Amino acid sequence: MSKYTVTLSDEDIQMIKDCHSKNPSIMKALDEAKKIAD
Image (tube, rainbow, N blue to C red; front, side, top):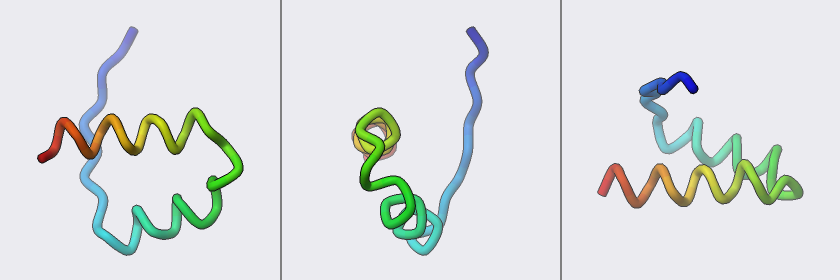
C-alpha cells in the first residue's frame, strides 16, 4: 500500500466536503487526516 502526503487549503477541503458529502469513506478519510494534522 502506498502512502501519499497531500496538502489541502481550507477551500480545497470545503470543496471536497461539498462534492463528497454523500461518500462516507471520503468523509471518514478527511476526518482521520484532520486528526493526524492537528
